[in-house]
Length: 91
Image 1: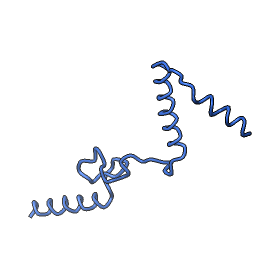
Image 2 (image 1 turned 180 degrees about the vertical axis):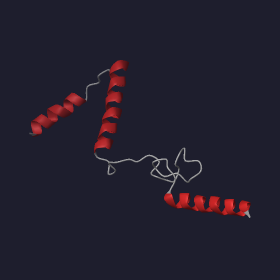
Image 3 (image 1 turned 120 degrees about the vertical axis):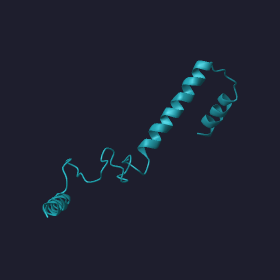
């Protein structure tokens, strides 16, 4: 085993040249391999963008629920206000 190690060390002493294309491909493989390695072994596996931070995008008045209809509590309040205003007009 020691002989193989010595042969390996001797082969490393030689100077070799690398073309620019080889160098660029080697760098790209290392970068892409690092990205894949980082994605595979990262502690966080699921990512949520916006994370339900309260921005409802398109719900301008804030009274609509997810289905686009008004909440029943808000409808009752509006009906009472309409009834009160029509009674006031009649008097």
